[in-house]
Length: 211
Image (cartoon, rainbow, N blue to C red; front, side, top):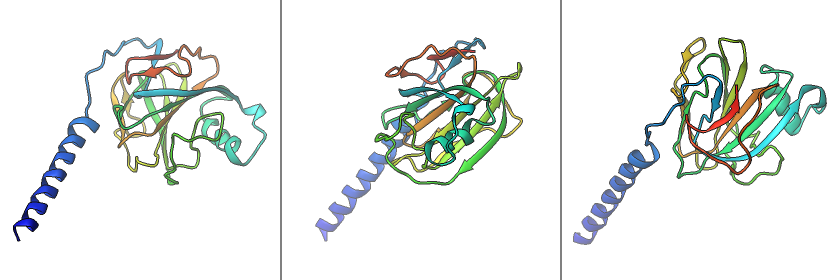
């Protein structure tokens, strides 16, 4: 009987330790040095840039697979632009922030798979088939951009804290992917990208592009 109680106490202690670690580490939200500069498009998340690719609707003639997904994802942003894929792991901060002051235009949640986001088989570095949440924003100057929260093998829950027609300020917390995964940034044509593949970016701080 004593052995049983010892095992029970050990398991309860382990659970309490994990819960505390989860809340203190995985759900941490450190202060960020927001530039407060609307000419700078800052990273919406903490992670590593794994791909930066240009896209053009005129060249996306495929209707299936990755090209079809890009066509759908980019059609309400512009006719051409840049896709930046940022990969998050369990060590990164899991909250997302607004890259510039803007208004949420639409939100679309898409159920899907939970495949490993680290192992990619396409040049965009994106798990197109995974569960995702698409947030389309527009600035006061009429520029549109999209942030796509993508779930992964470990990340099974996507949250966002904004509603359509809600204005957000640069650096404001807008969402959370529990235990990390991916953020895809879709920028319109004529947006000079200053970041590069391999950069480790900080949410609300690291410049990705001139806006």
